[in-house]
Length: 236
Image 1 (tube, rainbow, N blue to C red):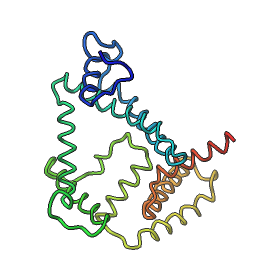
Image 2 (tube, helix red, strand yellow):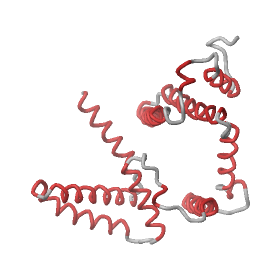
Image 3 (cartoon, one colour):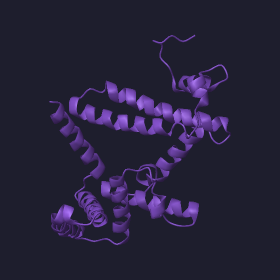
Image 4 (cartoon, rainbow, N blue to C red):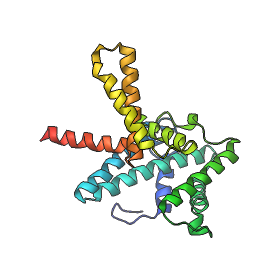
């Protein structure tokens, strides 16, 4: 029998999760479903992003290592449940993502030549679009955006698709000018009717997210970082 201080392999980790789900395993783990684990996945992903930020700020990687393990647990647990349901296995998951990485990096695993990372991203999007079209008979649609995504991330993803379909060399200036117009309207603030006030603020948030994307800034991430900084200022 393994002791707590022993080294474990990935295969042994899979066996641990399978045992937890077995008849003689843990009652809580046996009760879990794909749906019941959704909150856990969201929480663990949030904690992982926090660990990445902490590592950047402090250089302490212990928490990052732990949170990566927690996210891996969620992946393996979901895969184990799927295996029990006869849907797929963790090996299928690994096969799928490995094949995707090879397909979408022809400049590494094929003979395609690229000059820079921008060309890499362009090729990635073209390959992704082709794959989606083959799977569904149509290209990526706005409706494919998961509703669970934070609003700022969804905004930038929509803007990215729109900009890709209708490139605007002056997109940064366009977003900036529109934001200026919106800010002028918002000077009225509380004097606006409630529905109009909400619409104007929503448009301002959306436009600011677009402006941030044009500047190469991830809107959700930079807002989270600012909130974290403000929280620390408040605590101090």
